[in-house]
Length: 548
Ligand SMILES: [Zn+2]
Image 1 (cartoon, rainbow, N blue to C red):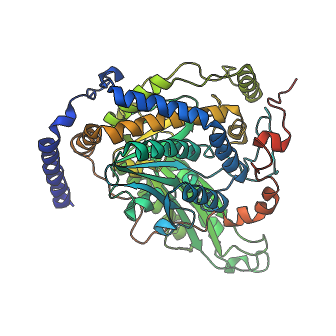
Image 2 (image 1 turned 90 degrees about the vertical axis):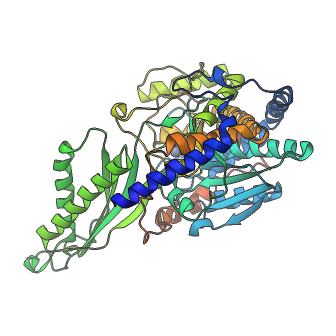
């Protein structure tokens, strides 16, 4: 182990020296020091500035196209690994627009890699596409009112990010064709992000091997980006299955060995241990199989854990504790712990400083969307309904986010974009398509996602994405600076090792049963843009619908 580490460090230093020697020029214009303002970004040349103006105007003209994508994917409301309608729609749309698309990448039926252009640099745009269980909700209605009761929906807003990326990509494609700008645009989906189920497999399959920079986009409440170690956690998602022996629960209970007892004892053990884990850790579980019926001693039972921590080593540590508690629960019940199943994983995130600074300069140029009175009225009504501060929608841009020191990171959510960010310079563009103050992973987070709030937010996001792509395609020194930062700063002391084990495979069976249960009913509500201008119009919803 020590030997391997030493070799890795030597290799990293060596690689860093090489890049420094070649890429010294790249250290020039873009800002470097921690917390330095984005003013460190060099001003655009006249040509770049003119192309940026053109891209902004073109994206404004494409706002109906963007809105249709947002509404279409919202109406599918599909759960992770079952995004078949969304997949078909995106693949067809990209092919119609001149992209070549490879389907079924990394052995995942709802994952693809689309490509247009040729040569360097290769800029890959990603965004998640999956929804949340039981989050079905009528858009534009400021209280809980499902489209399909009990059904899934876009209770985080992953319905909006592909529109951001595709609108930006099509504008860039047009400009690059005319101006004969070399480079390749890739577009890919964050399949099953709510299960953090795919991006480690994308990395394993080598999908980013020739990529220079990844521009990820994610729904948020403001237009912003950040660099360095991010707050929040990484995680490993593990299912524990116990095997016991069935018996008549009343007639011969002493002959039974309850797998459910093992699940319950594991959970009790974990909940006692929780007090003695670092404050930055988070963990939670659901019982995925608890037995069949009470008069049969459960011969099999399963529990599914998320173990979160702020570092890779920390994740491995809590995972190890989980494994030991599971083994102990099996001992207590004379059951057998079957080989564990890893259902997903995510590295803690680290984003590229040079790319984030360039993106932030573009964000300042674009600003926030102009919200209407109706948008603000609607947002405040949702906030009132949820009992949170009635602050309305964001009207001031966020600052550029910087690194979060480990000691100050109190944990929180995860995103498997972390895995990609440790393999290629990456940033996440957050765009203002949702309402502040929502709980996340909830029907309330669906409410704005097919309304003018999401439409305007996606258009603003597309502008930011397009402008940063222009920077990357027209200024080779920015790509070079991104790699210098990646090699000399980000990965100097920490290198990527996957959390998924060699034997693990994408959990493509997840959510199959739930989607099968609701899909027929949901189909009645798929958006038809040939008949309706907006999804609100199709559903006959007056925007905004608020309680009197
Ligand atoms: Zn997300």
